[in-house]
Length: 127
Image (cartoon, rainbow, N blue to C red; front, side, top):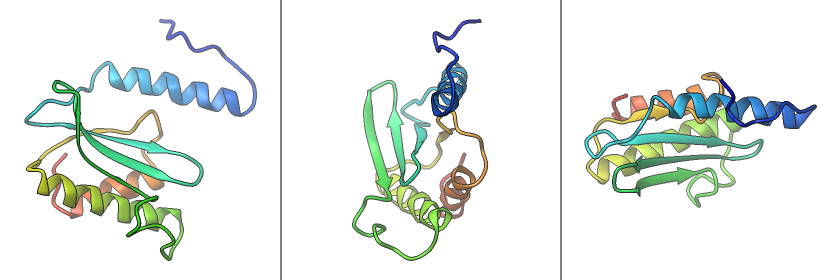
């Protein structure tokens, strides 16, 4: 089961592992019109969450730590991830989305990824 990702050293090895996991997750998950995909992209400094309809190929809602309402806010990165989760859920509800499929983007479901997902659930988005 080759995924086309070469084994590397150091940080490249970690990136390759994330890429392998993301390919594995995306084989099973796809967003539809009724239930779009909530994809989370995580870097060392920022978080981006998008609600995507894969059939139409459109982004319905998005939120990021780079948004003016969150940028420069108080708290650690987990607190900012919670704010992103609540904001993307609010914007998705405004776009008429009630339920989503969660795509963790190859990241492990812990820390900031889990904080974002929990905040989106609390805001009323169903997974």
